[in-house]
Image (cartoon, one colour):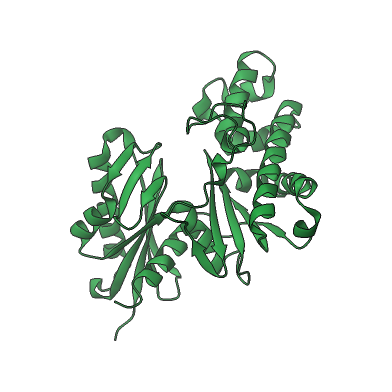
Length: 324
């Protein structure tokens, strides 16, 4: 039997990355493309298939050696049917993603949630190595979570466990994109910080933020908040402090419920704000957790960046297809 290869694919609202990995899940080549969801679902699907074909071609490995594709997608999925039920940032609704890519490439596909894939990648090759019970929490536009319980990916009854971003912390809090009020995501995600930043900038109360990003919410990327903090902007400091407070409260609820060994924090917001943000979050986490459960919990930054979902999706595909 020849060498075995896997494809890991990370589908996001703004970019997609296809990668080819060896049997030890080392990334050998990758192709990045813009997602361009405004062009419609059909165009996005064709772009996914094209990226996979391109990464196979540029890698130079024999197609016969590729055992499967791990495809990480955001949103609510039906893993058994291979369907993306809904993905707000992509506009996908009931898209049979798995069967489409299988037909286009002739390679079996394992569909999974992007945060599950990122968590699993950190578990096998990143910050989560050596732990058997951990949580991965990724902060970006929203907040997603993945769970490893007793060394295995935990998906819940229908495959969608880990939606920590929609844990309700304030019943009369800000409106969340899911339609509820006071979700963790509406209080601590980058988008929630951006909404408040725009309001403050437009009212003249945040001149530093106004100078950096104006009043267009799309301009408030994670790096803008990091820049404002380096300028010692008190408004940004208070926004970030509030985000860390609520993130810590949300994590405390998870610790009290699941009793993990470790929590891995990742995503663009964590990458840009770094260790000071993690320390603020841990302070809140420890203040709101049950004493008997929090003492031994390790909280650390993710190590793999964009590679986490690529490694994790490929590794999950390997588990799915190990008997084929």
